[in-house]
Image (cartoon, rainbow, N blue to C red; front, side, top):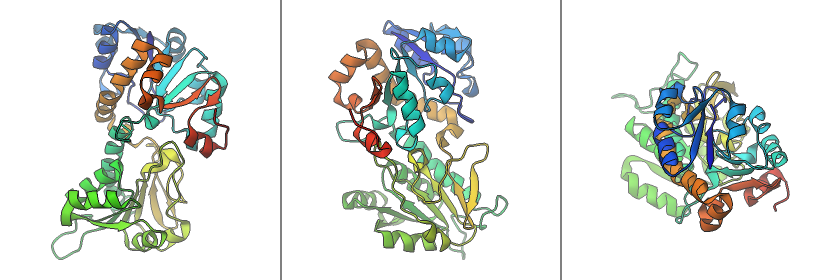
Length: 364
């Protein structure tokens, strides 16, 4: 199979679908790898590094798409990339279609087979290809929140860890999954006052055992979230419904009760966000203010630490890339029900139930 790796074109996106080491493994399995020139240059993967492992370098994205059977990316295809897809293509990348109907319609019109990293499952019902980026985003959310709480960028002037005689900042994390747990680890490390809210009592019990008395936990009822937001300096939205749009758990009215200069970070923005006031931002212009509250809603947060993120993502995705290349898409999906969970679009039709529901499109 011919596996193509285009250069990412989303704003400030420096990650790359295959590292040179991953490309080498694909080639060793008998496949061809075609890489757009400078695809990895933002994180110091030179064209020569790909050439040394046997990859072919081409000049443009259209060259990659024209010469490839499978396209391996990081972020969802932009409109000019969707225009390059054909019904013979396999697209393997993050899609987040629940919050992006135009992309879904474009993929349907292309006829391509689109497999989303974020809905591939595992035997324990986790999301193995979303997990590494959730880990990164969770940890980054506290870094970003701590920065924007400083006075110079417009924040309240709060040091999350406090100092002797001055209490620490209050961090509220909504969602106790992978992103929420990693956010808590960072916030605890900064000595913040941390509370995690979730609707799973089993998950809350696990978090309580994991952190002991370093955090507090709470059941994520609407009233509890409202009370918590009112007292918080930093609120991190880390809620995930696989394949579906994120629920809006923090309303504008709740936001109005927060102290001016407080910060919200919406990790769920790829799926539409879990704050009523959330809208996607970029690394060029990462924040905006609503109701006196700073919103950080960058849709590709891990792109800011692109080298770390690329290695973490490739560690997770490479085995699935090899399955698709070695077996072909039909056999690979038939043999692995968990990989089949990643199928979102094929033959012009939506194939994932949560995506179809979120977009109000028929499921086929």
